[in-house]
Amino acid sequence: MLDNYGWKGTIGELFIMGEERLVYILESFLVDHGFPVNKGHRDSWVDTYQFLYNALSPCIEDLKDLYIIFEYMLPLEKGRRPDVLLMLEGRIIILEFKGKNEVLLEDIEQTIGYREDLTKFHHITYEKNINIDGYLVVTGLSNIQNGVRGIRVLSQDNFLHLLQLGHSFLNEEDVLEWLASPYVPLPTVINATLDLFQYGELPHIKNIEDGAISKTVTYIKKNIYQNDIEGKKNIIFISGVPGAGKTLVALKTLYDFNSYQYRDFKNPLGAIYLSGNGPLVNVLQEQLQSTQFNGSVGKSFIKGVYAFKQEYLNNQKYPPFHCVFFDEAQRAWDQNKMGGQLSEPEGLLHVGEKIYQKHGSVTIVCFIGDGQTIHIGEEQGMSLWENALNNYSGWRVYIPQNYKNSFQNVHHRTVNELFLDTSIRSNFIDTSNWIEAILDLNLTKAKSELGKVQEKGYILRVSRTYEASKRFIESKKSEYQEIMYGLLVSSKAEQAQVSMFTENPSFSSYMKDTEAGKWFLRESREWKIGATEFVCQGLELDFPLVCFGGDYSVQRGQWIIEPKVYRKHSHKFKDFEVIMQNIYRILLSRARRGMVLYIPSDPSFDDTYKFFIQMGADEIN
Image 1 (cartoon, rainbow, N blue to C red):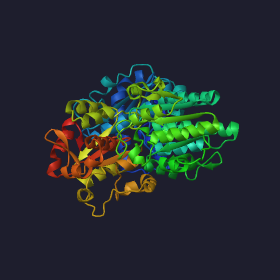
Image 2 (image 1 turned 120 degrees about the horizontal axis):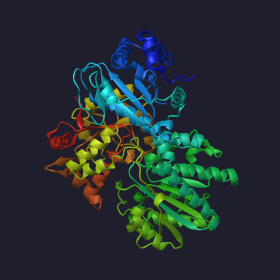
Image 3 (image 1 turned 30 degrees about the vertical axis):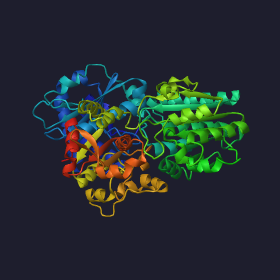
Image 4 (image 1 turned 180 degrees about the vertical axis):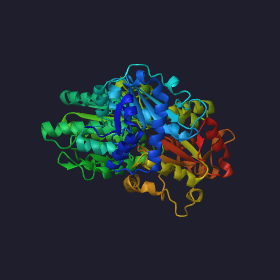
């Protein structure tokens, strides 16, 4: 018997059973699952029962066979559960009950969250194209309310009229099948990596299995396997929208190829993952430090670019692997930053030539993140790769359609599967258009795009009080247990000023690459230290708190770099304004579920605050 719901039955059976028996069953269900039950729970169940009885009993003959489920517990969600589900043919209705006399934004957001998560992560719902409708039922309302963010608000006056229940209901067999269906919420890239190396699979989410990620992984694997037969030098470039899962593609292909090499050829290291993002490498290595794979510790397959260069450049040492996955290839160093005769792309191709000489074939797979250059010596971006390929002949080049202009002087083949077009970071909500509108200071577009992502469940708050910002995020622990959160701040913000804004005399945002793992996995929730764009790039938090630290703000209708910051840093870069945009693009795109923007109450931030309020951001009271 399934134990992921409090009670299941028809409307007819519910009203025969009565409210007293229902309350007893639901209380026993929660207690058996380790959740405390108080008077508030019991009063809520009674209120829900009485509302349903008053609304549905007059038409009981038409609705007696309609199945209803109380307290369906979302698997793997640590106790999250919508109040009531109505099981119709091709349509499931979520009813979230609130015993109040007003509509609160957090109740709307909770209802959207249930609707979106069931739609995206519930296997049978996706497989059978079942429509999930979410409604907020406010039992104390005496007048009809307009919908909010796509969620209809129900009261006794409009309940049956808006629901339009009809006469086609699921039978018990189909209801049980739905209840038994796998439900797999999207994990963080950190947890997905651990699952991958432990179980060999990405999360079983149909949007991933049937979408761009699966197609891209399949194409890369076919390309590598075919190249093993043909004995050529291949280089593949992959891009995508922000948060599309490029790192997951790299790690999944790495895992599959190494598994194949070990199984068929007893080669424990056929491929290696590289990244110039030191904090990302440290987080992944820390997560995999006790995981065994192909007879080795999982973290041995993850390397920083610096260690790789030290190992194989400027010597006669030949790598044991013949496939390299290079993440964030747009961040490759130029010749000056390398301090030698080669740029970083040239160095990687040089090592690729050595691999080819030893193994008879080589494949380099490069993953590109647009608009994320933040380091000195990285501003030339993809032009370095074109120049490098002109200096090393014989490479077959495969690129996504959107990079044709970057490789005009190199013979190449464009491949549709090399562009990831769906963002998965914010629960498949693509926030990139909204973030670009913010950076362009396009209020009309920012307002429109924010409305779209809010209707899909993205939560945004602004506050001019640091403590209120923290409290709001910490309050989410009651709904989303084990959530990851922490403070993000620009590296260009003056430490003393941020320390004053956060009322923390010992505040620091300086973090070594080797400290990033423990910050993301443990320390971020303590609020003692903030992470800059260097630390959080390529990683994510459920609810980041992004602090505007004084280095970049809206003034007189444009983004302004604080003059002192400009004098201190602009000479280090070719275009410091682009760098500042990239910094805030990274900070604003780390959220999985939502984000709080802390805009200090200093008058210099008034225009920044006004900009976000005008676009529709909700303020924390």
